[in-house]
Amino acid sequence: MSQAELPVLRVAYMPLIDCAPLVAASRLGLDHAYGLQLQLHRQASWAGVRDRLLAGEVDAAHTLASLVYAIDLGVGGPQCPMALLMTLNHNGQAITLAPALAQGVAAGQPLPQVLAEAGRRVVFAQTFPTGTHALWLYYWLAACGVDPMRDVDVVSIPPPQMPEALASGLVDGYCSGEPWAAVAEAQGSGQRVIRSGELWPEHPEKVLACRREFAALQPELSERLTACVLEACRWLDAAPANRAQCAQWLADPDYIGVPAAHLAACLDADAATVSVDPSALAFHRGGAVNMPWLSDGEWFLEQFQRWGWHTLQAADLARLHDIHRLDNSRRAARRAGVTAPDADRRINRLFDTPAA
Image 1 (cartoon, rainbow, N blue to C red):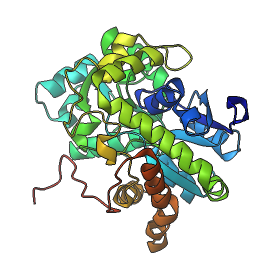
Image 2 (image 1 turned 120 degrees about the vertical axis):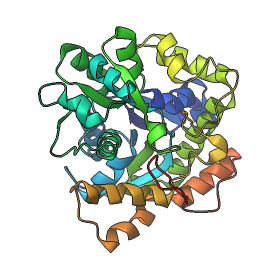
Image 3 (image 1 turned 135 degrees about the vertical axis):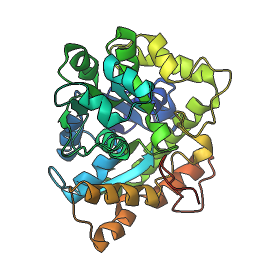
Image 4 (image 1 turned 45 degrees about the horizontal axis):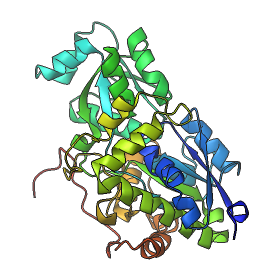
């Protein structure tokens, strides 16, 4: 089959460091190796990713893990049965504060005291109301003694707009994916106070997802797409030089459009070896990153209930078996020569989990 005859798969993505597997798959020609043509479609917001996916304007998407469950349940927006094909990365996000607040945190002051010293009601931003960044922000605030529902204001801002919002004083802090914390630090408008991998080492972040109808009607294409991106994830974790190459690609304005040096730093591309630290950005780690663990979905649904987004029902936990395409993930792993974990669940330990 000639390249022109290969089936085209349209994939939406946001300009974030963790779109790297999709960009790498395309630039390395892995899509053609698996009998596909990837067409990557950059989006301006997570709402745009959701809406284009549900409208059938794209076939799959790089998206927030928690957004998949929100769409499937109809929480905070339209409802549509979803399929989670694989996890794209662990970690790689950060909470960034204005310098004055960050200095208080660095000095060891309790967060409620730091916020009180602002002399007004503090405003935080996340990237989407039911997104992972909202959950990381809320979890951190609550663990530090701040009620995110009552003690602060929280707004939604697309990630690329966050550094400017912080610099202008529109917000006092935000949670986002990289490179937007790195950009704020480079501009002097903000400082990272905690990375998401410190909150929950090896946490799921972005996923490759599609409508469940697509996964059901196109199982072969879904498997090939997953295998293609899985191989790109393996390539990214194989050597820092590979990540450095990807930083050059991502610097293109068509992808992220941020200086390659910032992107390389976010990707830890200057290290001697790819980090195995559980808090570091990871794309593969032998396939453990890419497994759509059922236990990850259970944690997200519990957080939906915690923050009053959804009243959890037994049927909601059961539907995770329909959302998480474990069968597709394992077939794709075999196709790519990756040994997938045998278990469907893993143990999740957050930074405030009591020691066993």
